[in-house]
Length: 627
Image 1 (cartoon, rainbow, N blue to C red):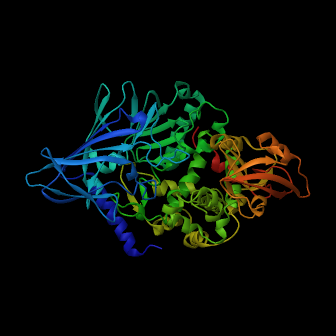
Image 2 (image 1 turned 90 degrees about the vertical axis):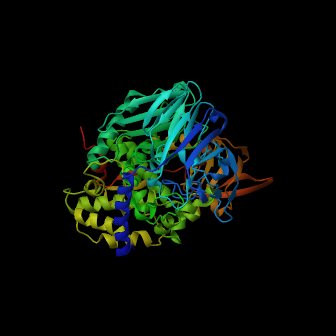
Image 3 (image 1 turned 180 degrees about the vertical axis):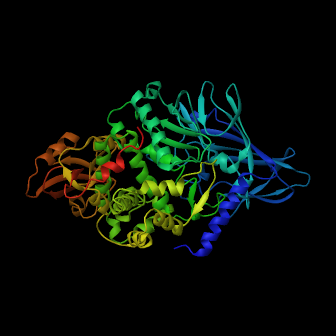
């Protein structure tokens, strides 16, 4: 729990951030020129000019990236690094402890340092291409990969002027203020390093911009691997415009000069969403806008979630994440607010905007509740620890995440915020809700981008202003308890209960299409990936776990027949009330094994069922506030 000194530091930091954003004397600016003409094959070339003074200098490559909650700046993709001053090469040495630091000695008479290097636009790309940022037809320009900055400096106090050269015929979108564009080169206004890194560029051969209204204006930029993917339905455009309206009604203010949704549509780039103050970097499957199944998936929550972050995470930010530079470690103990409340509000705004129908929204909550029941790691690890250890949670092996909990603070915290919302609504007989907290904590007056840090005490105080209650005890209990079952009290208090059906909902089908997976979590206890028979993960305590099946195995045959989705579904449909043995042929590496999975019943998929004994609070929570 933060001490009074922490609160004083938070207020001091907020003041210093505001002052730094409007310096009394403009600092000498660095310039960064990026040649992205080779981005289609994964290479971006950089020429950086930094103002310097003679003597010892340490330059840093950004390590701790806002929104990623981990020290995962992709320095492994940096190559060809050379320094020079006045036309003469300057030797450099990497720090022996900090791989992100470079030491130089600047010669006498040198006032500017030339730096050249190139970066790999597929640096760190994994099997799901989560780190890939370019294809033959598009590129996501991430400035954190393209700059160095002096050690000891605060990013608000450093000025950079950027220039970007793109492949001929490409268009782009960004929140970064532009000065001019000539041919294939764009020149941007001088801004702080904070603003530069917070303003990625989406560029591509197949590109479209859609205006979404709002005051200040909100823009949607689409880049795809093919032209057909840009054909956004009129209904989706209307829903996104409604999203802007509903967010304004929820928060009552904005904290951006303008906002840009950057949406990458590609099967070669992994699903992702990264928040920025005046934009968001959204990535999903190429046919996300034109495939009916995908439009029912959790993809419908992607843009609402990242948009909410402009208020929750960028404007109001936990003190442990408001570090002021990119080398200081971040503290994630309040990610249950930063990400958990954002997850909750993203689900709410998806429904209020119409991106999700009420039925889809309820199915989304059912999926979240059922998924949480598979996170068996909660019987040894409290939710608070998943937030504190976020930096390792993102890298834990997928196959064992049900045992480790990984980054459960997104979904489980959302369930707890639902409980808080239903508690406020029921106690005040509908006079108050979590909407009032959002307006108080994130709302008026509207401002330009700035950071206002907060701590746990500030959250408790604001909740008590909305409705007096033991909020400190409420959160302390739920964040620190260890229990086997998921916290579904919010659904119960909202008048709904989790059940299972033999047929998947449209949301479940959409999620399967988006992930290219078959979800058998709630029957056999595993998932199959890549539209094939790769066993991605296994849930502890399920029939698959009892049979000794391991992740990263391959399902070859079922009851003597070669695996196919139809064979699998037929085997599940043949089940009854009594347990039966499904004989599975499993390949692990170059070894084969036959195992019996004992299971009673059919396929099971989550749904919500109305509990008529309790007032329905979920429906008004999900209902629009604007006409």
